[in-house]
Structure formats: structure tokens, C-alpha cells
Image 1 (cartoon, protein in one colour):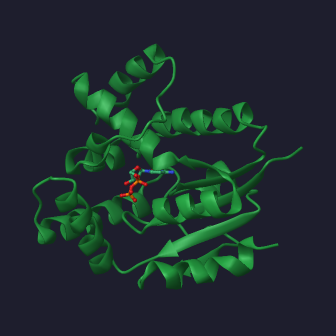
Image 2 (cartoon, rainbow, N blue to C red; image 1 turned 180 degrees about the vertical axis):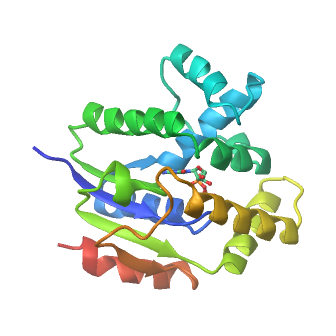
Length: 210
Ligand code: CDP
């Protein structure tokens, strides 16, 4: 049977992850956070001293990788890994590699048959035929405030103005890159996540309750 997929796309720190986790729990869908895969790969490349601007060097490492861990970890959310993940995301070899990992994840978990997958290009490229496509919209200043709080709570030193600057830069990189830029996928529902979470999840019900 064809898998049922809900895609959740949106810019940096828009709350895609929290919304996808909520959907996963409430409507019993298997969750995949594609950003975590980009972060994990960025972390591996930094650790191995690979020049992340050089696709050839990255390819050599990808050829040696057997797979990639799906596990989340605090260090994957550091500012350095965030920046590196959007730098590697511009390379088509990286995107092909991560897209393959995502497709395998769905194939290997077909017994669940229902998935919620969040990222930047899920409804537009990776799972173009997703059953429901959500696009999460939030002002950059609100995203920076939330990310600042997350980092402070996790013990990382941070400065609000720097986070805002990084978010705006990451938005620019994600929206203007040649390969799979961040766009509002055709046929998506725009979810406004500027306000509190209860207000956000109220907008989901009519699309997911059936
Ligand atoms: O949590 P946040 O929105 O800050 O980022 P993320 O979803 O964990 O993704 C980290 C980075 O990976 C993003 O800045 C994107 O550049 C890249 N990414 C992507 O290009 N395509 C995806 N499907 C997911 C993430």
C-alpha cells in the first residue's frame, strides 16, 4: 500500500520539529526529522576535518559512510553545526545522499504506513506526492527569540542579535540555493506559528482529523 505522508516545511527555527512531533503523537504517524540528518552529516564532516565547501572531499567521505544515525543529540543543535548544515545543504551530492536516506527510512518502516516528515524540501522535492503539505510561517524576530531561549536553556552562550543575523543568513542560503531551495510547496496549507502553540495546533485539526 502507498504510504500516507504529511510533509512539514518551513524556514529555520519555525517550529517544524515541534509541530511534526505533535502530529506524530496525536495522529500516530512515524516521525522523520530530515534537518537532523543534515546536522548529523555536518557534524561528521567537521569532526573529520573535511572541507565542507569542497564537494569532491565530501563525496569521498560519503562513499565510506554505511549509513547515518537518526539519533538526536544536544550537540547537533549547536550554532556551529546549524551553520555547517546549511552550508553542506547546497551541494547536490549531499542532497541526493540525504534524500536516499529518507526514502529508505520510509521503505524500511512500511509497517507504520503513516509518516510525518519535516524539512525544507519535503513537499516540494523529496515527497512531492505527500497527502498533506504544511508550510510553517513565522516572523524572523520571533524565530530568533525562540532559538535564543532554546540555546540558553541548553547551556550554550548566545547573543540574540547574532542569532537573528544567523537566521536571516540561513533563510537567504536556503531560499536562494540552486538545489531544492526552500519554497512554499504547491498545494500546501500555510500554518501561522507566530502565536502560542495552542493557536497553532488548532489550525492543524481540520486537515488531519478525518
Ligand atoms: O531546526 P532548524 O529549522 O533550525 O533547522 P533544521 O530543520 O534542523 O535543518 C538544518 C539545516 O539543514 C537547514 O538550515 C537547511 O539548510 C538544511 N536542510 C535542508 O536543506 N533540507 C531539509 N529537508 C532539511 C534541512
